Amino acid sequence: MNEIDLREGAKGNGLALADGEQSEFIQQLDGDIYLKSRVCKPVLQRLDEALSTGGASYDELVSIEHVLPQTVDDDSEWKKLFPDDEERAAWTHRLANLVFLTHRVNTRASNWDCERKKAEYFGSEDGSSPFVITQEVLRTKQWTLQHLIKRQSHLLQRLAEVWKLDISKVGIQESEGGLSSKGAKPSPDEIQAKRELIMRALSKRDGKELIQSSGALYSSVDGAARAVCTLSNRRPTGAPYWYGYSPQWDEYLSGASDSYLVLGSMDRNNAYAVPYSSIKKLLKHFHRTKDRHWHVELEENNTGQLTIVIPKSGLRFDLTEFEIVGTT
Image (cartoon, rainbow, N blue to C red; front, top):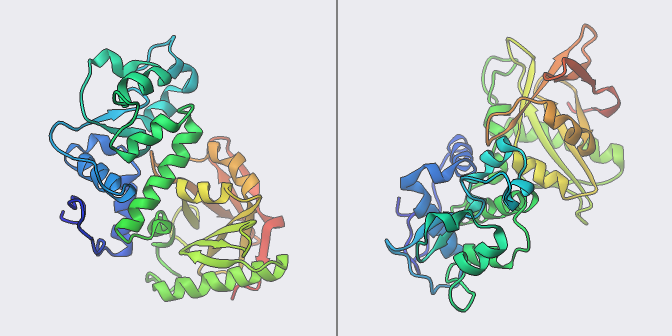
């Protein structure tokens, strides 16, 4: 708890967590953290301390507030910015939507439109705030879904740096934690060796070297090309291959004009580099664990060819044209 609730001026050594624990911890941070009442405030405080150069004071008078309100009137600006009720609910209690205040005002004020909130609710008399996580609200023109997505990714990355967590490990335990063809979970070294074979084959195919930046994340030297290379072990029942595709991976791939989700497996000599443009179109048709990852399943036909299952439509997405060979 000392690392989470670190006092100002102290230096932390990070959290000593195994890969599976890191994945679970980051997923909890990425979820409805406001509803975890005994965790939310210490996490926000640790984040604000990490973002600031000091000067803020944290005591019992500090309150946690939502930028996007918990309740939204049908004729409000918030309803226009977030028309989808389910989507709005999914973001209301997450890290990106939470800020610190040094005072409380009446509950009616919490539902004000964004500009009025900034002027009368989040700022002090001089229009500023002692909290860095609140200052960003004052600088943001419009509180949109796109802004929340980027802010969430940035804040999670900052916490990962503070606690020395590998944020790229989100989803790895789900997608690479099944049984191998030998009946045992492959070691991290085996997974890394397989991943390197796949990415060397992709680099050779495209004539563009992709270098590992962290975990499953790869990028060209100039950053114009990116890839996420994830692996699955053959499963004994159901679809033979399954992957957990995280929002962090989606954000990473969306940041380059030339990017791929590379789907590999421990028991095959091929993999598939699916362009992000195709993945983006398919996402809405996948099942998803709320506030976590999308479920990507591959089926195998009689000839050994794989297709992506599109559960909400009952169709299949052919992977033939995206195949990479020479991965063994």
